[in-house]
Length: 275
Image (cartoon, rainbow, N blue to C red):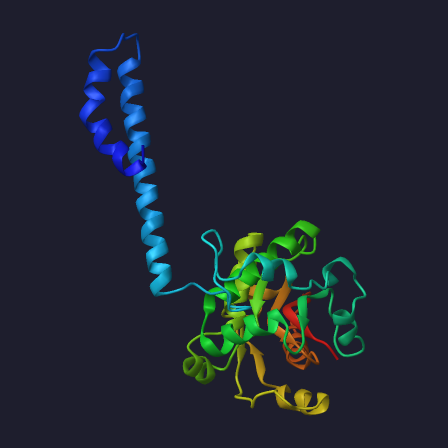
């Protein structure tokens, strides 16, 4: 008997089973619990039918590869999730990201989730985040990375999470700060406090794309400022960015933060560019 035929059959015969069959204590309760179970299964069946119909009209696609998502997948398909190469730099103190800042500024710890190179899945995901406004991608990647950082002990002595800020005019134009959404995912996964007002961008800078290392450093010099110094005194700050290329933006943020008394700074990003 199909599920569609079972429901009307049960509605016609439920009281027969409740009154004509031998009863013992709790038998009626069992009958009605069984009824609720059938109704629940029926509703689930109808929901899945509706979900499949909607997926035909508006297919849900993976933001990394463009393939159709399965029913239990969201934003990123399982294959892409598994295939994204992890740097695991958070497990090695003297990793290539940390080495970027040697001799430039005092960074306690540094790491990146994946490698940012041409054709990579993480590059496609970050592109969808920054330029197509798929903010959920930033949050989800931040949450995934946050779980790894928390479980490894990387975040044990961190007090606050601060995203690299955008200038207000640029944030109004884009509509959001991508690093903020990554930071929200990190904060929710780790339970750490997200601080959005203490570090601000006071100068509009041109895009860093296609600039040399020296040009990138000159382009960000003096563009950040600390708005609430007292809140950050004695804290260990985790700075969060989307991509680390030369490290010039994070260096500029760090140098400004290190002017505060008894402060420590660590940095992470979703990806590091392969040199």
